[in-house]
Length: 395
Ligand SMILES: OC[C@H]1O[C@H](O)[C@H](O)[C@@H](O)[C@@H]1O
Picture 1: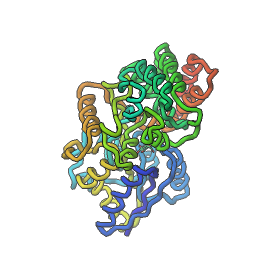
Picture 2: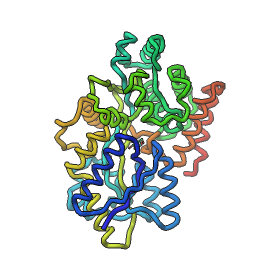
Picture 3: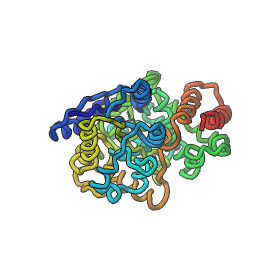
Picture 4: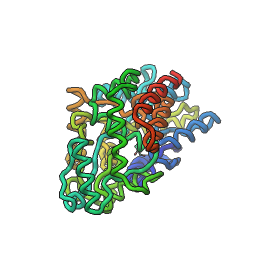
């Protein structure tokens, strides 16, 4: 018997990580039917999943995250994982905040794979040396370093012009420019005052300045191609979640030496979390259900948690794992995750489906990417559209 798993892990580092699970399932005697849908951020994968589910042919498991787990749960399509959760002690293993995301109506319906951090800045140290600049800690330092890098003949900030990537850097600028409390009010609680106010306008103006650090060819570029520009020394920086680290690792590079990582400028006291999870669809076939239960068990076992996250660039979902095999960026991520969980500053990523419902996220993406690509749209106009985007989406 086998499981069919729908996901969007198709870049070099992502595919290496997904293969860890495939190999572990096969070692346990189960088949793995891979249903990978290309497209960073997962928008295409979710569209494909919806059409399969609507036509009554969902996969055994799918990469579904955050509030979207509740949306699928409400449709009654997800299976119950409480048996495995009890047998494996998930309540003790998982931070309450993570466990809560995996439950619908009090029952586990998904298993967490990792914890990604989104608010990272990656850099090529040779390019920084050539330009005579340090790793920036504020947005102003980033803009100044960017100018020096351009004068030295490199692309300052590698970026891919796609809505989800624009939203990913936008949320890090909101955090770095206006702080965690404002981020929470605006992009999590969707407070119209915050979404349409002076602070949002200031953040939007900072966000648009990032374009000056990008190259002409960025439109439509995939995120991992932008990471490759940093790896190859064409560009100095990239703002991206730590799935980018999966690409550095796949290229055989060492954290802190061949590439640098730091919290996105101005966000040192914040951690935007993005938790990948596999949700199990309700099935009638006992053999498939048995395979689903095994998949769920394996995902939270130490073997998988270590091997997958070393390849993927994220940190384990269970905080009790020995981290000695992990690099300096991963160790910093875990320390910052725990510090911000205790002291405040741990916020769900809006751009990666952890903060708001999918339809609200989509409406905000439209505003962000249209504003970013329309040199004539003033920030005031975008802020106004942000308010209506959050209101229009059917809640
Ligand atoms: O595709 C880029 C990234 O998109 C999403 O944020 C996923 O959570 C992450 O696992 C993936 O690597």
